[in-house]
Amino acid sequence: MRLIFAKSNKKTTNSLVPFSFERRDLRPDDVEIELLFCGVCHSDVHHVRNDWGGEEYPIIPGHEIIGKITRVGEKVTHFQSGNTVGVGCLIDSCRECSPCKHSHEQFCDNNTLTYSDKDRHDGTATYGGYSEKIVVSERFVLNIPEGLNLTGTAPLLCAGITTYSPLRRWHAGPGKQIAVVGLGGLGHMALKLAAAMGAEVTLISQSPGKEEDARTHGAKNVVISSDAKSMEEVNGKFDLIIDTIPYNHDLNPYVNTLAPQGALVLVGYLGSLDPTLNSAPLVYRGKTVAGSLIGGLKETQEMLDFCGRHGIASDIEMIDIQDINQAYERLLKADVKYRFVIDMQSLTKE
Ligand code: NAP
Ligand code: ZN
Ligand code: ZN
Image (cartoon, rainbow, N blue to C red; front, side):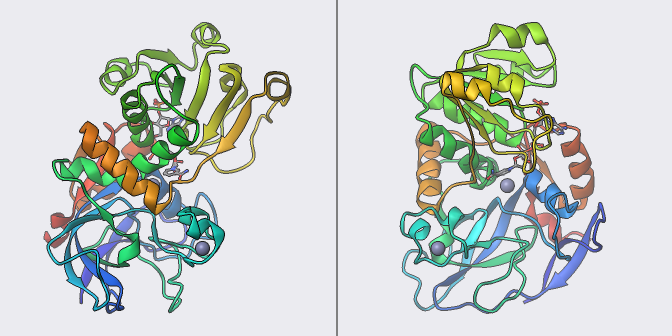
């Protein structure tokens, strides 16, 4: 099988270039999926630019995958050729540990990421969705509900589940005040999902000019983070904050906006905090600063079904794979409404 995809060819290169490789043969429980669409997550940019360190190139990003099954292994029971399916950030795990048994595969010590990881059976590099086809165990394949537009569904496989999971864990719903920090791919999904769960939602953004879009996505209020007075007006307000900012930032002003016993959940930035976190508001008001990582397979299917029932999909800008480097530059400037999705048919263009 010959495939063409994009890769980063040097350690810290900023650009993706075409590349060919072979997908492995199907194991008995594998399905082969022909890619239709693949979302562009900010994590793809972090990996390509080695923001988190330890990257081994070449890599093939892409973990917001929608495609059609073209072949199934002999022991596959849940899918057949022709099914439209999704694949997210995980393609394997040990299946035996406590997190796996509770369908929290994202916390399995021996799980396998869709890309930038090693296959747990043969040790080969895993390559993601900026490609023609992918081969995945059926256990890590998601059903796509009828009626959702497929282009806008691709980002649900990462941006959707990453925001749905903390909203559920911290009980978003009627009577809850929720803030979303950053209106990008994750942020706009968080607004839509929290509003659909019945919560009152506020966007906190660094960018003036996103107010109208935020309201369309379900925000009742918008606060510009650099406006100290507006930030002060929401002091003590939020039961839950989902913070999607990808880089280091001062958490203290956001913690001030939490209600007693409220939680600020980081999903974006990984690393030490600078300035450091003042623990006094945490102790005096019982506040929590927490983190959250995508979601397990069961919850991802639950999220897709929820989106199917509520007609929720991502707002996307469709691109060809040839536009990927320009798309990354725009993503870094927070200039996308609100997720790039690659039309994988473009891989066959010269
Ligand atoms: P994105 O589309 O680029 O959105 C990030 C938003 O953060 C921007 O739109 C911007 O919103 C705000 N922002 C504030 N400071 C920024 C800065 N210096 N540079 C760029 N944006 C800035 O990113 P995304 O795909 O939503 O991902 C957000 C973060 O979550 C990334 O770090 C990604 O790696 C991470 N992530 C985590 C998980 C997980 O499981 N925890 C899963 C997926 C992604 P405003 O203009 O409104 O301020
Ligand atoms: Zn992602
Ligand atoms: Zn496990």
